[in-house]
Image (cartoon, rainbow, N blue to C red):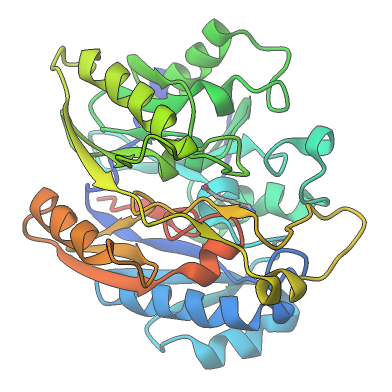
Length: 365
Ligand code: KQY
């Protein structure tokens, strides 16, 4: 049974662990939405299956699917993946799924943030999002884990933690008026502190250029271990990403984490700029509420959007000359983990990448 708890994780001695801490498994949601995914989401389903197959080598994957897609998903996914009927509007488990917290005894609970599909009616990107908003409660019911309801509109992709009290985020996203217009920066910080048990927040100004999430940090920068971060980078000063990465770099170089350490910052060169082709744009259904994705639009490609599995790194690859460079650097940053590259352009076309479609559930007792 999953109970709704009225206190906060901090008050109860729970914290959000870092992604590299041991997992019980990984949650994903099956892509189906025709105004996000081209050709009725069939190519995206292949890409999600590849990601699920890669993650399944390291930990159990649970795929939440709408009822009408159960048989299709079950047939495509590897037998070791668990397929559960769990309705959703779209397929971004990182953003609409539960964020898990643990205590020192190994108990696991979940946080149910409010979700407004990256900006609500102000932006009208992906209406409706009612089913997505119920995903955390359903995940926690399935796992029989207790749930905190957090009074904050927030997506999991807008934060990264080191598990030792430090949180990384961007002002562009968490302070955007389309998320929590009635909350001040201090009130948002207080909620993050209460629900994730963080003591120190590093606010980076902006995320990746043309990232439709309003600059999620999980496409820009992440911790690879306490005191060490990886940042998407370009040396091309004429690329609009340059000043975004440069300002983040400057900030990170002068930042301290919750333990008072200065940070070691590793630059991961972004793939060469990619744009949506006409064929890709034409394959997406147009509906009234949809966010237009025209041909020629810059895609927010980044190698930072990888998933840390037990013993592995599931890394986006774009068929780019810098794919190998990213693999090598990540291999150095994660000794002891196997780097598994996944062809990820199809996921990128939907506006995110491998980190955005996954949500780790920490191992409990
Ligand atoms: O950056 C992420 N965490 C998710 C991207 C979601 C894009 C919605 N189309």
